Image 1: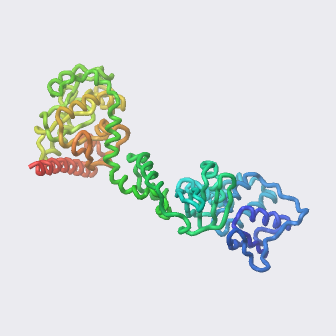
Image 2: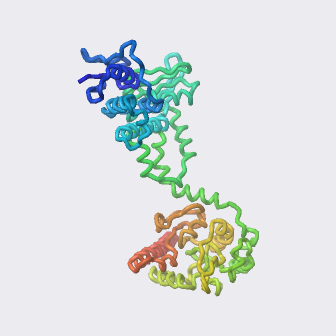
Length: 476
C-alpha cells in the first residue's frame, strides 16, 4: 500500500497524482490522506512525505474538463474525493480517454455530485458574505467579513470579491483559511475564529434599509428561504434581524403594491360617469363597449343590492341565465349561493352582489352557450366598473367568489386553494377575502368533494358574517 498524505488542495493532489502515475501506481494501491494544516505550512507525519515524480517523468495528457472538475472536487470535505479523482485520472490515462462523457459511470456521477456541491457552496459564499467596516491603527479603513462555508472554497470564491470590490481593502475570514485584498494583491492566510471579525457596524442599518426597499412581499416562501439560507449563516446576515417584521407585514404590503398596480388604465373608464349613484352607473354600463364581449352578450349584467351594503360579493361573470334576465346570480350558481348565505345567517337582500366582468363570455356547443373564462385584458377592461361599484357601495367586507374575482382586485396570479378564507386589510374594504365560486361546487367530481367544498364555502360566508358583527360591536 502506498501512502499519499497531502494537504487538502488541488495543487497538492495534482503533484502527488503525477508522481503516482509516473510510478504506475494502481488506484487500489494508494491510500490518500488529508494532513493537518497549520497556518500556511503543512504538518507531515514522520516519513510520510507525499511522493514526488522523477524529473524526467512525462506529464500525462488529460482533458481540460478533468482539471476543472478536479479543481472543484479537491475543495470538498468528502474523505474519498482524492481516491475518486485518482481513479478517474488513472482510467483517463489508461484506455478510457472519453470517461467524463459517460454520465452514468458511477465514478463520474459521484465526482459530478461533489463538483455541484462545491459550486453551490461558492454561490452561497458570494451571496452571504457581509462586510463590516473597521479602522486600522493608522486611521485607514478595512472591510472584514467572517463566513463559515461547508467546504474549503476560499480560493474558489475570493476572486469574485477581488473583481467586485477592486478599490476596497477587505478580508474574508473562515475557519479553514482567510483571504486578504489590499487593492493590488490577493493573499491567503490561516483560518480564524468568529471572534476575529467585528459583530456589527454603522453599515448594518444602511443594509437593513436597503433590504427593506428591495424585499418583495409577494414572493414570500419561508420553506424555500430556510432551505436556501441555512441557520448557520443567520448570525452574519444583518437583513435577518428585520425578516420577521417583513414577513409579518407581507400581506399588507402586497395589498399596497396591488393597489398601486391597479391604477393601470381600464378601457371602461371612458364609459364610467363621474356620479357614484348606483342607478346612474347601471344605466351607463348598459352601453359599455370597452371590450369585445359586448358583441355576443345579450346585455350588460350590472350588480344589484343597496348602496351602503356592509357586504359585497364579487363573482366572475354572468352565466347564461343571468345574461338573459340581466341580474347577477339567478342561475344554478345563484341558488347554491342563496342556500349558503342562509346557512351562514345572511340575507341576500342586504348584500351587494356583482361580477368582475359584466358581459357573458361563451362558446357555442350545439344549441347551448357554454361559459368561457374571461382573459386578463377582458377583466382589466371591465375593472373601472367594479371600482365604481366599490366606491358607490363602500362595503366593510368584500368576499370574492373565485380566483377571477380576486384577480380583478389583486391582478396577476391568485390561488383560492391556498388563500381561501384568509382575511386581508385592503384599500377597498376593511376586510377582504376570497372563497370558492358557487359554480365550482357544482362541478366537483363526486358528492363527497361537493359536500366538503360546500362546507368550506358556507364557513367562509359565516366568517364574513362574524367580521360584520364584530365591526358593528366595536362601533357601538
